Length: 256
Image (cartoon, rainbow, N blue to C red; front, side, top):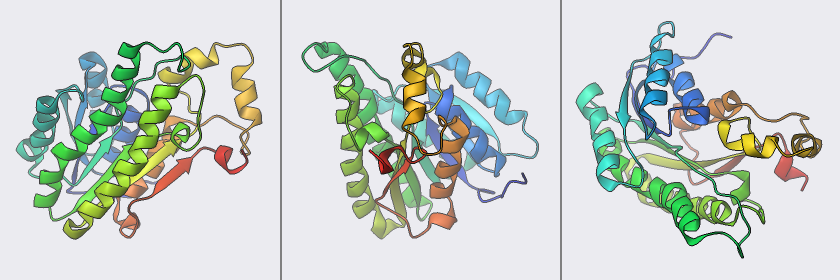
């Protein structure tokens, strides 16, 4: 279908852009004209995403910035590159995330800390680094990548659930703080989506079929399903939407 051009002359920063949801979001935003700073710890995957953006017809430009969201200095450097390369920062998508599997009684402290440091603290670092640029631009948008696990719970993902639930509170605080500056903040809560992160679960006998049976739309989500919603929330079409958590899950949480 023909793409809108909602992001002509605008620049965004996307974390976790080397693959999966981050790559799909980058391709969608660039297809609508956005210039992008793409960051990740995976430099090779990041360059692949930049090349894919460049291969698009008439889309925006992208640059790669190898950066770790567990580092305040890395986050600041990535955010500042938007101004250096493109002269402004209009939106930020805090997408970087990891997962560790295991119930509360058996999860290792190192695994618990790693998930919280990337999935919650890393989003806070991303938001904190993005705010000065968004203010200089006269407003903008932040999207925090939460999960349906932040709306429900999962005994095998306690650290992940804790982090993703924490993002809902962070989002509301950012919406409150940013409103006076024209900055909106929203959470996207993807349901079960086909990415590298879900491959270990797909390998479990019958798991995917069981999940699909619980989704009213009858299929697993794709990264492109999520990217379209992120693009909406970053655009002026969502100019009166802030502080919200939007489930993109095929109806999964509607019928639990």
